[in-house]
Length: 398
Image 1 (cartoon, rainbow, N blue to C red):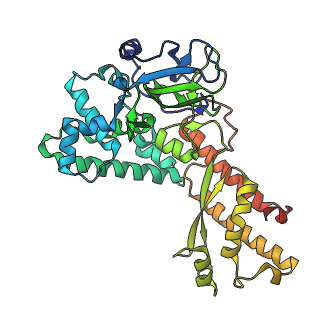
Image 2 (cartoon, rainbow, N blue to C red; image 1 turned 135 degrees about the horizontal axis):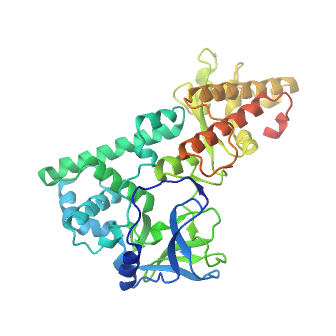
Image 3 (cartoon, one colour; image 1 turned 90 degrees about the vertical axis):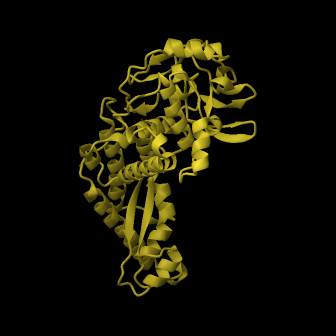
């Protein structure tokens, strides 16, 4: 698994043998995989035979798969639909069905539910106020608060819609929605796009090695090898191209790879500039501030950002480059980098936690929140170091 201290759940994942027996009895092909702990102490799916490229690793048939269409067609799903709550999302219907279905104690997904997390104490969505305070300065903090508010609004819409028949708590709903968000897949069964909880496959951890592919086939949902996989290797798949804030705030883990890392800074335009209105029009902003995303590749990002920064930093109005001398061009570019430097310094000053430089995951026992903040602040410092250089080739920035 190529991620650093990810979400740890508090239960002990009991009953995997029963889950595998249940799935196998309904036609699942899972004979050549097993559940084991990876090097980070996390449960994952491992190969107990060699797989060649193109070979099927797992197949979970439709009778084992819990979809949002099943949830919508259920009694509680129909009651929700008739009440027409604000939240009509697949995830909301799945959550309500799963809560009601688990409470019935006669569900066909009983063994699956028994292996879902009961708590997410290490997921940022469930951080306490002291932990959240450490995230001050990071965009992840806003993402967490937005997600909390969204789930509270969704929960309230269900309470309002179902009235006295609603018997689940907000924590119940938040935990179930988080299990769905961190595990569900988009599937297309019978020409219908829907969200789905897929037993066993949903335990496959993220990996950056692109060793598998997954998708629907005529019998259900499967995973195939894209590269040779040796017996004893962990089976992984990619959760997609996302920045580290999204992996952290939404999924509760960090990727080992930093290729998609980014940070955000706020660029403040000079409100006294005579050409402010013209600059705002050219930048397509309604206020004299703009957010700038800075990616892991400094030179590529700066090359793309410099045209915007040049406009934002211009004091003498917008001029064609042909009208400027070499010294004027250099002065303009220095002003653009100075504007970025100011934004970077302000951003770094916002953090409550002043972390030491990040050492590219030298220790896997580093708490996830610490590793996350180290990574984010180190990227900001890398940009600041570039802006503070005495000598660099501005022409390389385009």
